[in-house]
Image (cartoon, rainbow, N blue to C red):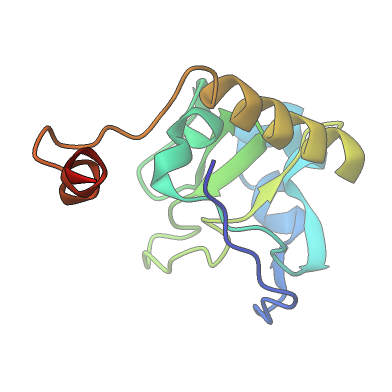
Length: 136
């Protein structure tokens, strides 16, 4: 398992306003999972952990409306919120669906436990460290 920690990410707070979601009929049933105010991201997940962030379900409307995708960690909002194609600044923010911080931590921990089963780094057959050990 590889992970890097930073005590304070200092990322700007983000928000998804009720009016933005209310204007999108395809998002009304998950609105409470998408609406939040002044939430600063506290975890960054790399592409090497794709199992946590790939879409398992997608809700989309018209081309000029945001879409939402359900990941193992919760709903993610993507796209633009007007015909002017203004990007939504919350594309990378996840809000766990009905999960507390402890549950979210458990999901991430379980993912790494599963991923690490039987995984060992492979060394090339011409590894100089191994050659030095054999020569001794």
